[in-house]
Amino acid sequence: IAAKGIVDAFPIQEQTIPLGLPGQDIIGQAKTGTGKTFGFGLPLLQRVGADPAPGVQALVVVPTRELCVQVYEDLELAAKNRAATVVPIYGGKAYEGQIEQLKAGAQVVVGTPGRLLDLASQRVLSLDGVREMVLDEADKMLDLGFLPDIEKLFAKTPATRHTMLFSATMPGTIVSLARRFMSNPIHIRATDPDEGAMQANIE
Image 1 (cartoon, rainbow, N blue to C red):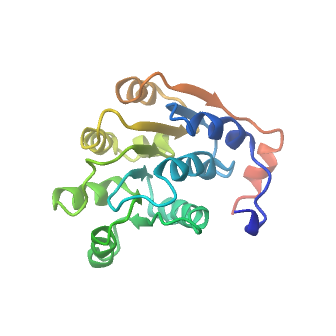
Image 2 (cartoon, rainbow, N blue to C red):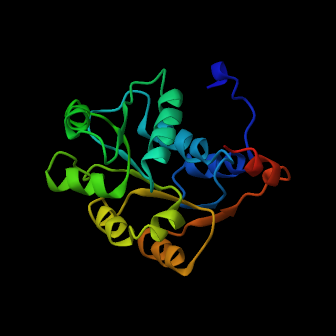
């Protein structure tokens, strides 16, 4: 990623990367635009390995297709010199291409809950081998009513997985999700002195 001029870490990255690498469960509290994708993405790719076996080993669940594309592009950039394949899975787009990519052995899947469950129920997407799971913008997913879907996705993954959850706010539902599906998570709140200005600059 240095080739793209990304050399300095944001606060959330400084705090989550060293914990995520050895497999510590993390609840990261950070707003959009503060660099959290690499905060969870770099440990996730490192833990999947430079030359992983085919089959889904990492799952990143996001609330919207826009975020799905954005996270996919960041992870694709970070995985450029590695053999891990990253695929975006979201609704409103033809199934065929997504099914082909999964059948070709993609290791990292970024997706929205509805389409992920859809493909899992068609037995095209197996989550049995997921070792890394991330919920990004978890509070937005709850606002959009995805809680039952998120619970179903968790139930389809091994209980021994490494889990990272990111959310701008910490409503009770998220705290209870964390208690049920995570193992001794560390809660990280990252604030940046320039955060207000950064938020204002997001188009």
